[in-house]
Length: 196
Image (cartoon, rainbow, N blue to C red; front, side, top):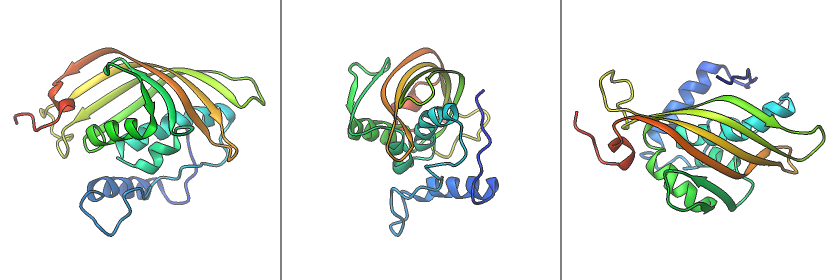
């Protein structure tokens, strides 16, 4: 699986604790901003290829942490073109995509893991493309640690185009997601509480 070592201003355990607390308390705390991000959006000292991959990683973190600000940072703007084989028509609006993904998947106990990343990029260019696989694991909210609890896992093939913004962040402009296989209880994705 793809991994990078990023330097955070706080320790990794503080980042993890803050992110889990953020996800679990965000919907119930009226004093916190719903877009308050517990992860840094822009990271320093990344190579060009790491920074390109980070666009998709920010999307994943946004979904897994139900973090709208992190999710939005992964995309180049409101006008997008994202096709997902589980949906009948492509998403052309970031607001619609965010509403669907963060409403349906964001509250779940999820992990999206990226692997087999291949990047087509020429030094100095401000556009690139990547191909990657993802393993996407989902469980009902608060039930992810139950060994025999309901789970739904997908294997997904990604083709993604990105552009480098004036701020130096790479962002997604187009994406095609093809679900290759699924395993488990699909009702986890549909909503409602699967039987215990």
